[in-house]
Image (cartoon, rainbow, N blue to C red; front, side, top):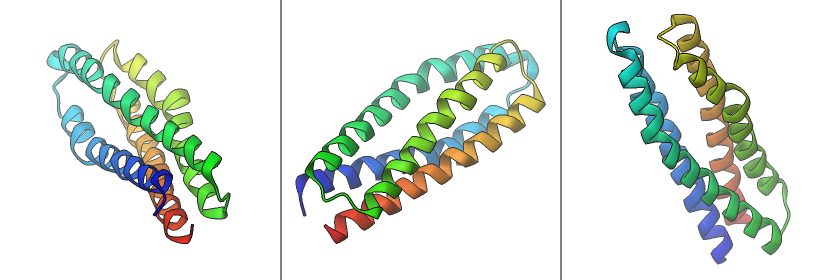
Length: 139
C-alpha cells in the first residue's frame, strides 16, 4: 500500500475516532452539566478540544492533499474528500458559532442544534473513512 494511502486511512480513522468520542461521550456529558456550572464546564471543554480539532483536521488535510497529488484520482478519493469537507465546513459554519453562543449560557435549543450538527459531522467522518479505505484498497 502506498504511503499516501496509509496516511490517509490513518488520518481518516483518527478523525472518525475523534468524532465518535465527541458524539457519544463528550457532548452527552456536556448536556448533563447543570446551568449553575455551565460557564466553567463549557469554557474548559472549548479550551481542551480546540487543539485536538486543529491537529485532527490538519493531519486529515495533509493526508488528503498528498493523496490527491499521489493519485490515482478516483471516486473513492472524492468520497473521502467530500466527507472531510462536510465535517470541516459544518464545524466552521454551524458547530463553532453554536459553541460561541453557548459560551453565554446553557441553552437547550442550542444544545439540540449542536447535537444535530454533530450528527452531520459524524456522517462526514464515516464517509471520509469509507472513501479512504476504498481508495487505499483500489489504488
